[in-house]
Image (tube, rainbow, N blue to C red; front, side, top):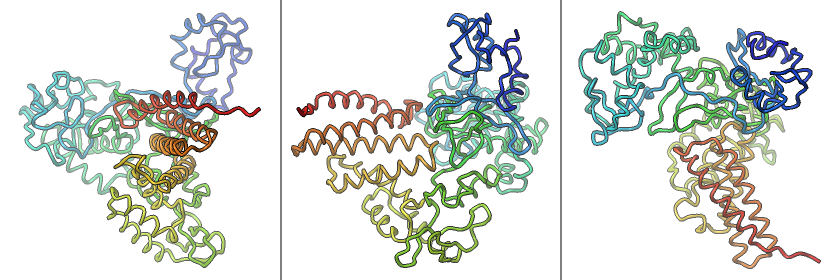
Length: 554
């Protein structure tokens, strides 16, 4: 009998061809090791069977390389991409991967080149080998991560680096991460090959403002500062800049965030309504998990842009930074799954329909029309109005909740409830309305207002940005605190015990949803700290529920 794990190439081809597993050991539920009848399916891939835990352990060394929830596929349009090899449950981890390379963001103030955290003259010391400032802890200046710029400073520059300014963005740091990739060509050819084969969109980037800026601040700087002109051509360095721009992930586990490039994670497709969410571990590994139920054969996707931007803004951003024109299902649907996120309200009396273009993907500058009454509006009038509202919103003091509420009230008759401008400010109000004096300081009307906003936003976000688990988790927590406060007030007023119990159970449900959404967040991030707090609160809430005595009707 042929063992599946001995034929990865054959298996991949078979899986790609309709996911048909043609091996008799699987179809007949035979143990991978002894070929006897088996009913214990591998919990990772859900493809192979074992007769016992001992045999599963015995086969793990060979099977672990292929025990994945996805497979890599390639075509001329998408390039390499990932497809689910089985059904995947919400919250299930699909991929956990260490970065191929990491380094400072292109625009950054000085950071430690070991741990990549912010440094100042008081918290840093010069690396004794090269002069680049690092944290005072020796683990940072001895870090293998710091070796590229350290060794090339000595070997190629032959002069120590001196950083004297620690406040504004420092131009010397723009080239650090590209340099670290260049360094791998001779230091680690295997790593270099993985990096250099990632998409760079060199043709699309040619002569763009970003490429012109990269030539000056990165390619020319590396040639001048490190004397690399004989080692790497301008074109080679610009390709590396393209790889970083297209594949780089901002990793928010440090202050400031740094950029990292991953191998398999770079193959995830984009969707403005993705089925996957990304998180990071404390050590910078990326964690991809299912944001919605995923069926076998579905393409795996994350969002490359901000899902709370308008359709036009998202598509423009993707075109300028990722070099493709998005035609995902959300962008193709002007209503954005009946949320009308980019629509305005019809101004015809008693209509209140949604005014939209026929398609955002075929140009939004055509006349927009109401989906109810058919009234048309010129794009120029719509553009002027949105620019006016956007100008006002940009100048809004977002720490002033009263001003934010006034903004929402002012434009509620012009913009639909889910419009992206309304949503952005409503999110601020929902999270910050009780930030100064605490939830107990809110009036009953303000508390109900907060609950209404949170419910509306969680419903909307589940439709348009299911992959944004962090913001959804925070909103569920806000909804929990507001509902728990409502239960406290009802109890204090002597309301029926059943009502208090019902509100506490409702609050517990919201808290559990928050914990589920935030379950993969590291404790170095605010959402990870909130997760720890939510878990403690859940224990207290369960105790409170048990203490509420509900009268039994006889």
